[in-house]
Length: 112
Length: 117
Image 1 (cartoon, one colour):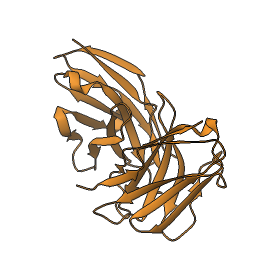
Image 2: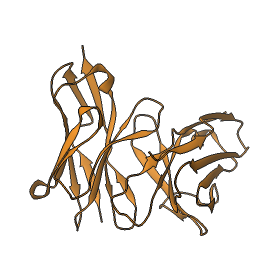
Image 3: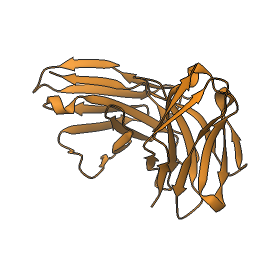
Image 4: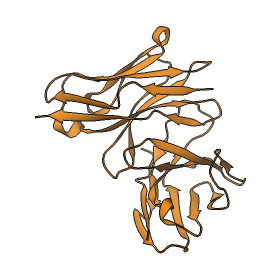
């Protein structure tokens, strides 16, 4: 069975500083991993996905994530936060049965 | 890119009535669609997996007689909340995916805010 753990429910950073949102997964095989962003009362937008082709994945809006099998992690980063990045972020794992497991989410706050 | 349209975006209904929410994949065929429920400031909870032409698979604790799912075509799945009660008020989100590729991302609708009075 798969699971995903987002280690922080809230993260606050100042505008212009780096962002790190942590995600650890558990899977009995090489998983498919995704990061999604959700703005208030909106659906989810795909930021990036891990496809096993490359461990460092670049996504939209300057976000990227690195798959580290030895650490079972897939942390999301961005070099410089922007006010528009304030949102809820979900780490997601997809199993062979197509079942999607969401992390509990991390609320990113950007301080001016 | 792949687009999923969810309708309506919000609905207010009286207790005891039924509400239907539609989820359409606009530019691809989705043999599998998922329905989620999201409580305020919480993550998405998978309610059921909908496969075209077959019965939906419900997650444990989800009442299949209350949340009726129909996936009649490769581009449309519907969720009907029957005899709605205030505790059914929530944000419902559908998603669709291309099956056969396990790294294919989910594409989400914009969600439906249901308020039962």
